[in-house]
Length: 333
Ligand code: FES
Image (cartoon, rainbow, N blue to C red):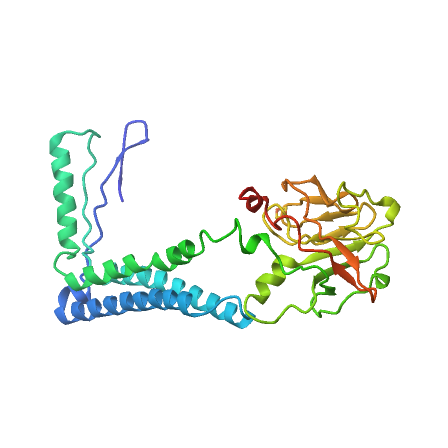
């Protein structure tokens, strides 16, 4: 590029270097190469379509919630289907552009920016020529493949989204857990019933209902019912009104599902009796009804009423008396 220098030595203007020479591609010169490239693009779009369909079929046919293996399989099929579906569209579009669309560069001289009719007409004409050059109209097979792939690709996102909306939060599964009167508290995951005598002051147990049937929805039931249990010195416990018999000699049990957005509260600080949720740092005071002392949660952890049976094992007095989990569900009451 050469530069014209003015009187003061500063560049006056730059020479227009022009466009580099245009090299035609194989598909420009050989109609058979163009046809081959077109077939390749159609095949890639076809792979994208099949992947999207596989994701949809996987969503509807693989049962989720019975076993970990089925959850993993469902996730794998959905993930691979969505990924290949989207990737196929991208790869096909790039291959189409590189092999079949015109690669002739068009230059429009810089002009005063304005909306005069002549410029608009030129722009429209250039656009039409560009579309013409891209050969979209003359390749109906490609058009159809593109439309099919683009139309199907969002479905694997939308169908699970719509399919998982709604439900019976108000009266059904989210308001009840597997806890029943007399059901023993057991250690998670080995399901061993816990005697009150084995719970020392300061110890913490992750607890599930004893003897949950290992069948459909087992994992969901376990996740909803999971409880964190500890023993405090009874003199440190602030017994909540109406809950005088919900604890046993300082042993208290609360839902482990955070009332903010449902993470498992997991960190117990023995000195302060605070339970911390690691997700957004909501903190609950176990000595005072697991009320919120810090963070975004806006209600206490639901308490599980407990006592002991004739053999000294800890048992539930009933189910939780309020929904477990995020407060949002409670507002649906
Ligand atoms: S989910 Fe526990 S603080 Fe947000």
